[in-house]
Amino acid sequence: MKETLLKAQNFSVYRKGTCVVQDVSFTLCPGEFTALLGLNGSGKSTLLSGVCGLLPATGSCTVNGEQIAGLKERQRAAKLAYLPQRSEMVAELPVLDVVLMGFHASLPILGAPGQAQRETAMQLLERVGMQDAAKCSFFALSEGQRQLVLLARALAQNTPFLLLDEPDSALDFNNRHRMLHLLKDLAQQEKKALLLTMHDANFALHYCDRLLLLQGGRLCGDLRTAENDGTLETALQQVYGDVELGRCGEQRILLKR
Image 1 (cartoon, one colour):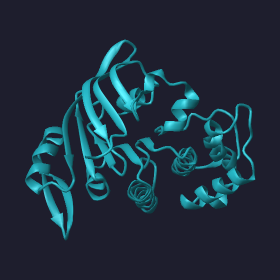
Image 2 (cartoon, one colour; image 1 turned 90 degrees about the vertical axis):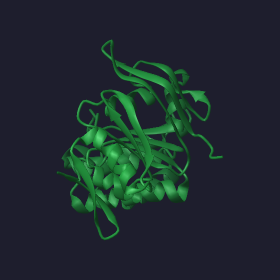
Image 3 (spheres, helix red, strand yellow; image 1 turned 60 degrees about the vertical axis):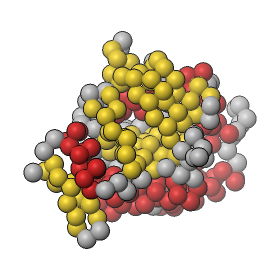
Image 4 (cartoon, rainbow, N blue to C red; image 1 turned 90 degrees about the horizontal axis):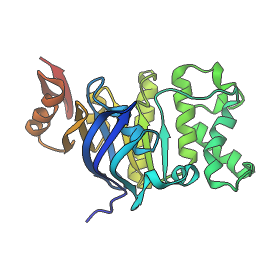
């Protein structure tokens, strides 16, 4: 029986008093790379924000058996890392300092990163292909470059669970593949659980182990990408309508009819 890292049960999330995500239940296990798919407005970003405690929610959502809602910010940051769609940085900082922010939860209060953390941060920047920008201002980067730097910051937290909200949305073709390869390796080799929202179902089919399908704020599908073509096609039609699953060699491709 697989170890459960995150468990959401009858979980609902609210924005400005309105229930946007309604009564969803799912579990995530170490080593799973899971895509959360759905049309615009289906509640994908809201669900992620609720899981990491940024929006009010009802029901239960636990990491390693602890209710996320009951954790203090530093405790939560030690258990899960969150990569938002867009940067919320307000101070102008060098790229290396942005990555070093990922270590704060593991340092003593008022403690500062040391040489070991600086070396690790540089290794993480190299891992995402941004080592040459270490001394640049974060605000001087393109949106795609900022996403890569924020991914390095999330990796610096070294948490067992990562939430990523459209982490590839501003990336070019090569960097999108680079990021998704990196995330897949994190799940497989370091046994982390990753949940990311995506718009491109074909990238999800290629890289992810599992798909959670969200429609109108409700979970309408939970399946493995290794399922047979007919099962996958039927499930994806619930979200995307008149589509069919084709193949290019061994790769599945979702096509609009």
